[in-house]
Image (tube, rainbow, N blue to C red; front, top):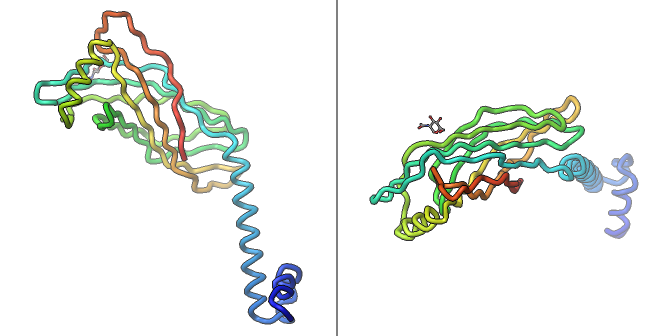
Length: 206
Ligand SMILES: *[C@@H]1O[C@H](CO)[C@@H](O)[C@H](O)[C@H]1NC(C)=O
């Protein structure tokens, strides 16, 4: 029996293990395992992937945002983010949720957020708050800061990270890590040019 026909018999007669010998028995078990895993992955993919979560920043405001001559940033930023689960059959648990705030690629704010559950087609509004002081690196930042101040808007990135668990029918399965990133233009505190915040869609990564 050639190896090609043995491979075929592996695929065709997983029940006749004894007749096919130990090697093809292992082989057929392996193949059925791979096929099962593949089908399972495909089903999960089809259920989950076509409906990514969506996130929008509804509002963002800076009560304080000043840079001292020693490059210390004093900040007070409040954000309202709506996260939506568009799936009809899948509920989502959000664990280890954290919100981060960045200015010029430097993280200045961190806010842990309570874990929560989101039923099918539910929306949840999160309100991360960032306040405190943070040292910024580099001289460029100071110049860019003055420029943003003059423009009346600060370009701030807000990120949300969470570990997902997926609830399908009665089953809870470990899901992927979700990373939500939002590029915002936030009006400077007490901006006099009438700049207002425009609701902004975020990007979602798994
Ligand atoms: C930050 O600003 C908000 C809104 O103006 C205010 O309610 C809050 O007390 C401020 N937080 C701190 C720590 O100053």
